[in-house]
Image (cartoon, rainbow, N blue to C red; front, top):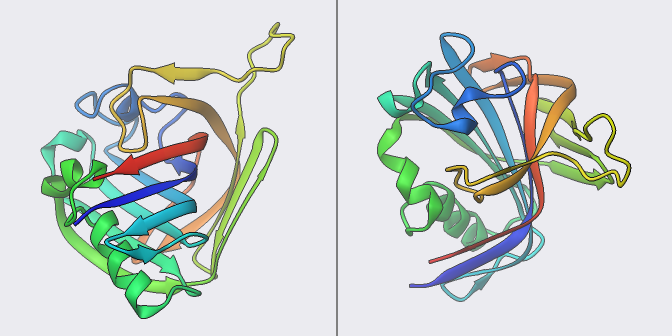
Length: 200
């Protein structure tokens, strides 16, 4: 079995700017929990011979204050345009069963609270990134360009431990409405990248 995915990514979480969990999973969230929504827009991809190009996946997590304590609650939405085969393969990759980055996080998940098909919209417009999942999730984040940076380049974290990659752009939430699988929160901070690459 082998697979590879390429695409763009956006997330928002409940921590204040900057999310301590993104600095290190064992730092402890701003509050007594960390709730995050992770959106993947797959531009190229194949999972064990199945083409998944153009599909989208959004996961939502509810973790303890210190993420490495485990017992995460995880919910997953898969693009309602996915065939049954694409759906099954994507659930396996994003659930960590087929190796890759999500497999490293799978032992921290205590409960899968739901896996559903949904209409997923993802849009990238310069520094703005928006995600909508049916009636359950809607958020927009904006990449942060520091004061005085004349070339318009946003702030990036380098060397972080994150399933998407070690170099991601810092963002803040401009708006959010998130209530899925019993996980509800206000997004405050975020991360994005125009290009992630996974393989196993």
